[in-house]
Image (cartoon, rainbow, N blue to C red):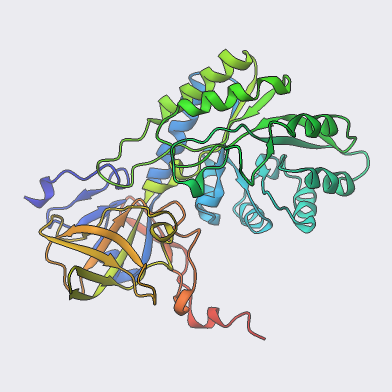
Length: 419
């Protein structure tokens, strides 16, 4: 029976095929969700995010008493996600004034916010300081100049200096951020001068060093190599090791466990730097990617040299396949299985608007609901209005109940900024 089919680990925790062979997420029938909320739609299993948040907290608590887990919110900048994760004891890092505004609206304590960015505008830094963010991650000398001008007299802003350790993990070049020729942070030759300048400043307190070597990392060894590169820069009370833990996008993907990832980082700090240091980590996609599926409706099926299954979304709700050649799985929501090799393509005016290459679907036809798992990271975040597309809603599901936390865009929204 269809209900006995084992779901891949790329789907949200607790997902299943019901007795009718329909996918359920968060106890909700995805066919009914598509009918009620329309398509495309981001369907987010609230309990999945909470479970991963608790796993990170527990993994760190098992190895150190002094740690902080911070959500790299660029992965899913949504007020409901900020609020949920803060309820679980996880603050956030933000990379713009806009993300900062969303985090504050989501109820995150400003003291638990880390403000990032390689090109911070003066107004953004002023906003961050006025809001009382806990930490500013200093990326360049200009950041220090602006902070010294903006921090009120008699106050000191805690900072971490972002260092590029010259380590390039095995990942897509577009999301490798710690190599010798990166736009992020101080390279090892310029870092000593930046540290000296910051330590002499009356406007800032140096809390420690930061690095982030990249995203979607499946081999955890480079984190140790990166930390080793920082040992000549001095001794600091805290080290922010960024994020980077990879996730499973397809059934055959086998990322490191949260526990192994945390152990590698905490042990590296203890063994390379020494005990008694605060360890900060910034998971993003590892907290949210697998919590979400995207639902689409098939509009047409075209058989040329290849078979193209065209849906009502595309690069306006998932840019990752076009930016990084990212690969996803797909299924018909009420007919899991295969038989038809095809490409799931979007509705946009680009030949490259291909969501899932070489999908294996069960006789796809117009009107079918297609489900693509593992879209919680950088789906909503990168959604856009190309071709006048209306950005999809975000729907939280839990225990059989569904609620909209971000509504679908409207045609009026598209014109709201026109003057």
